[in-house]
Image 1 (tube, protein in one colour):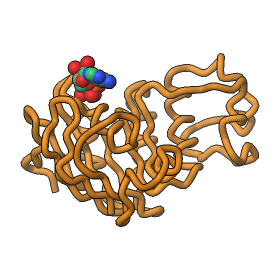
Image 2 (cartoon, protein in one colour):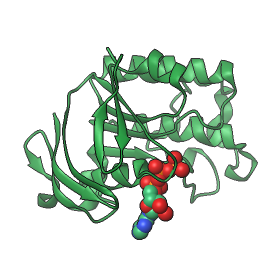
Image 3 (cartoon, helix red, strand yellow):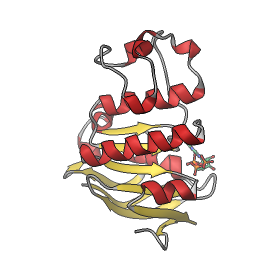
Image 4 (tube, helix red, strand yellow):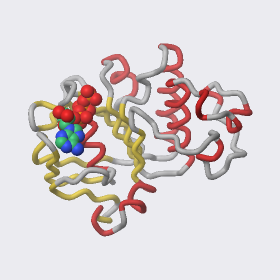
Amino acid sequence: MLRLNKVAVGALKDISLSLRGGECVCLSGPSGSGKSRLLRAIADLDPHQGDVELDQTAQGRVSGHAWRQQVMMVPAESQWWCETVGEHFHSPSEEPPDALRFSPDVMTWSVSRLSSGEKQRLALWRALARNPRVLLLDEPTANLDDQMTRQVEAWLVDQIRRRHLIALWVAHDQGQIERVSDRHLGIRGSALERIDGSH
Ligand SMILES: Nc1ncnc2c1ncn2[C@@H]1O[C@H](COP(=O)(O)OP(=O)(O)OP(=O)(O)O)[C@@H](O)[C@H]1O
């Protein structure tokens, strides 16, 4: 269980929330309303007020590095710091999941050739390959076409269910939110509200 207790970051105040394993919670809100900042605060990448706790371990009790091994954020723009794709994985011999539609030699690819959509799919795989407890997804399909979006959505939801991951997923597209979310929270001013019609 991931718990936020009275978290305040940027314009958001008093955010209290519990997220369970295997549950996919979508977060929406106007541009600039603070979605990415909230994810960064949960990942201990931005300073904030209030408490964040994972399975009774408070964020402040472990190093940022150790926290982020469990609480993995996949930002909208992924970072790549080595020359080849495989150097970013602990097990470069791993086969790419079918849903991501890569050829088996993708680990040998140079990062410089990657399209934005390839980077996005690889960043998702890289995050899951590290076996986190929590996935913080910032518009994970923003660079993908409709068909690939559906495939990646289905793959992510399946991974979230099977691995019992805690997932907070920033999304703008109402259709996507309806397809993937168990719960839909929207930013309204400084607060989070449950959006009507979420199941
Ligand atoms: N480190 C920071 N210090 C001060 N202000 C920041 C910082 N990071 C972001 N902001 C500001 O906080 C606000 C929220 O930014 P954030 O990136 O969280 O928005 P968002 O809801 O994710 O928007 P979008 O949908 O456009 O990606 C913006 O006005 C942004 O300029």
